[in-house]
Image (cartoon, rainbow, N blue to C red):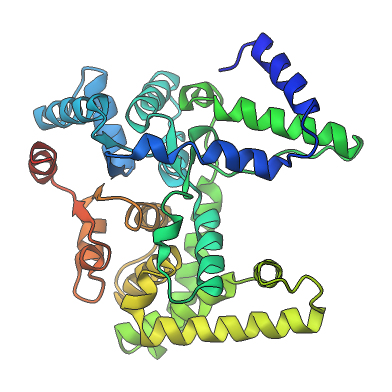
Length: 367
């Protein structure tokens, strides 16, 4: 956390740099993060593993293997050969703990193993991947691998405040100073606040999705049909705002409302056909959207399985963990879903998807 003196110094510095926008300033800081990941295996921990390792750190392990896993991870992180970036899903789910002591202990472990690094929010990743695909359809997301990382202070998003009663100059200084503050915030700093964000909305979403699944269940006669239905819905995430942003990147700043609408519909149609006809290719182009759609399709095809808020969190974990990490430690039901015949997420992304403690120990010991 910054001291008062550091905050004042930053304010003075930002007043002398009115030509640097808040976005440019954030990106200049973000560009320093990839160096923190060089030579490190990126290991994604879902909430199950954060909690199990937290208990081991508190001296109350549920299994001796959890002590071993924690010891190995700490050694690898300390040596600079591994890192466990935090995600919005893991943060939001873990911070729902009502006991302040265990919530703080979880946060401190997150700070330690993540080295202060988080993967950008799902919304941000989808935006980046879609714009990258529209700009260069033949390119995979390799060019984004240095751009999806943020400091843990921005784990829930990169928005900065704007005060309507302030003029543009004052707002700019305040926004860049806010970025400084958040850049040096730790998860432990946030853990002292009352949490619980997102639970109610996820439960409501699960009920709504289940109702739709039941309504159209008789129409779904194959996994491919379920995937097609999910792809059709997901391409709508290429919104009008994204269409306009993509046109601006292509130097069409003066596109009319009609042209933006036509472009949006054309891209959505192209995305749908590409996802339907070339799923393996599109997994490398728009991975977050692809994983999200495929997980929902798998659950939709299994008509005996009901979505709940836990499954929705699991889908968000899959979206965060698969495309930008070498390994993902998760629960058995999610692993089974991701490895099933129609999914093949380990093959598609080259990610080690592990759930059992013994498999995790073998993976860590061999690295």
